Length: 309
Image (cartoon, rainbow, N blue to C red):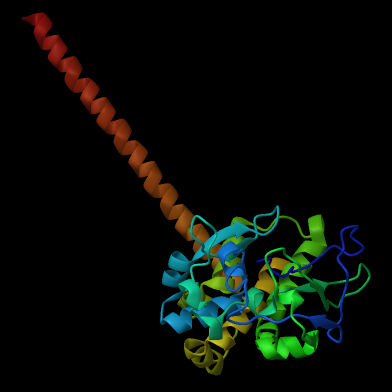
């Protein structure tokens, strides 16, 4: 199974045939077709944030437990921006496949699986600030759904497969990825801290919630009690805020107001911590030196006693 592309370089020589949502395709998949489950047995499924949220809720698992059990990380670009793929066995079979019964999480299946055999293409022309959603067909030899005598528009197919809700929830995240790739060297490589924040806000909502509700975060950003009450219980509000927060972290878009002296306080706190660490290290080194001289003095005293004897 091929996953939809988050972006394709504009005017790429390898650009696939572009389709709009009004284009008609011939495709149908159903239990009983000769290739049923074949795509799930050669799965390459990239997960978007809403995919992770739906699946971890389905299993009643924490974000950490879900990520550990069902996903594997990978790098989405040369700068190390972290992505997630669905875990497979050694033969490439999706962890969610229930034998010949098909997908065990069908109602909550990821975006990639819903779109198949269509690829969602998020693109932006060189001189444009707006991303556009287009589509292309994925044709794999094992898939017989293309031979079915059913014609349907891409728009209707997206409705049928429940893609539109997933696109709505993931759209701001797709745009983050596209902006990062489109900006290239102009933005620079994100810091290790920024990459960790990206992973947390994108995939590990439980950890991100603890981060947002922490005293340090509250002191840094001017957000009201209504906001904190909402993100404490509502995953969707928290996820949307995470995308906004990442735009501020990665691109400096100051849409979340910081406390007037937040930066000065952070610098002062870090300086205080650094000073304490420095003092502790100096004290440790002084103690080591003192112990060294004491041991040498004791050895010298013992040596002197032997000579006098």
